[in-house]
View 1 (tube, rainbow, N blue to C red):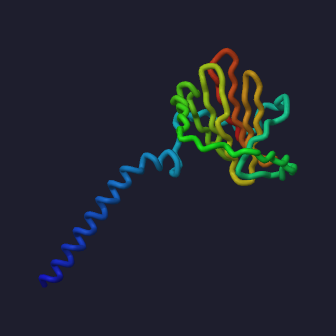
View 2: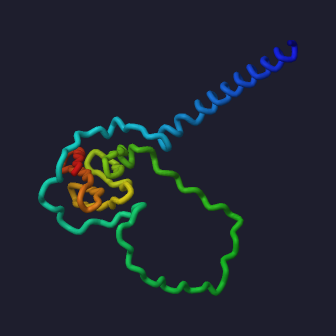
View 3: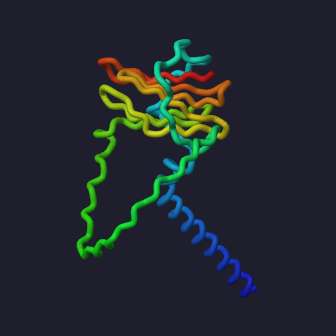
Length: 182
């Protein structure tokens, strides 16, 4: 009977310490995971979604190619130019390179907002008088197309038939963002 109480006591202590360790670990990494691995809603990027195709007029100019995880066409291949071989090797320096200061927080770069749409995710940096594309990540089977002009930016995540469009427009005012699902 004494042996059984000892074993039950050991198991109770083991379960309590394991649960405490897991709780402490989660408290330490939970915030990091919420912003990266776990899906979260970006409340700042809540904008009304317009159903249907974007305005009928096609944007002027050719879309700017955007690197994406899924390529629908193979890029043209080109042989790289031969590299010149250095005649002398540089001497290793005992001086350490000075680190460059990192970019200041979002105030200098703009307010970074994520727009999660049916066809993927678009991240824009919005400043007081313009917008800049940070990234466009299409879902599998979709591709990103980007148009830029002086007063607007358009990002389409499309498979050719359906997709999503994110517009940022500014003309003497703060950027106005509109989302279309078609």
